[in-house]
Length: 255
Image (spheres, rainbow, N blue to C red):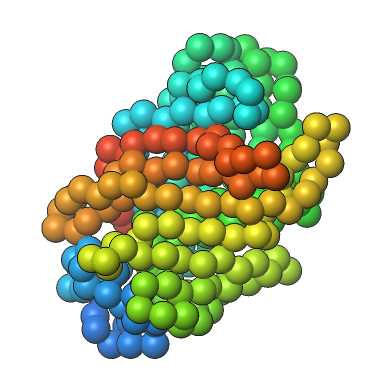
C-alpha cells in the first residue's frame, strides 16, 4: 500500500513539474478574494512568498476513531496535495493493528482502498458519494496550500469580516462550504453540509461536517496550521473522528 502511495505521488509530481516557477504571491493576486481571505494571506505571511503548486504534508502524529463508540487508533499518516489539477493522496498505517489504507481524490474520482496484513482487502470505497466526500476532504485544506484559493475551480462569496463562503466545482462535483477566521485573521473552522456520512448498513446520508485548526506555528516565514480536528455533527451529538498534529508542510516538491 505504501508503494502504491509513492507511485501515485511520483506520477503527480512529474505531471506538473514544469509548472513550478519562481512566481510569488502578490497583493494583486488576492484583490478579488473576500476580505477575511485576503487578511489570511497577509497575516500568515504568504504575500511575497513563492506560489504553491504541490506539497507534502508531514504529520507528527494522527489518530482516527472508526466509530463514535470506539477508542482512538494511532496512525502513521503521509499526505501529498497538488493544486493545478486538484489532487489529494494520503497513506495511513494503523500502529496498533495490521491495517494500511490509501485514500485519493484525483480527476473527479475518490477511492479509499485498505488491506489487512497488506494482503487482505477490507476497504474498497468508490462511487459518487465517496468521490464527493474525498473532494470535500481536500476542500477543508485549501488554505493550508493557499494557491488552491486562486484556482478557477474555487469561487468565493463574501459574508462578513470573519466569514467567507466558497464553492468548489470539479469534474461534475459541486459543493459549498463556509470558512471562519479568528480575530487575528487566521483560518479557524470549515463547515459544510455536502459531505456523505456512512451509516450502519452502508447507507450514505449527508451530515454536518467541520474541520478545525486549533493552533498555528511558523514555517519559513509563514504561519501554518499545527493541530487539526475533523468532526461529524450527528443527531445524537458531535463525533470527532480524526485529530492530528502537522509537523511540516513542504511546498513545491520536485521528487
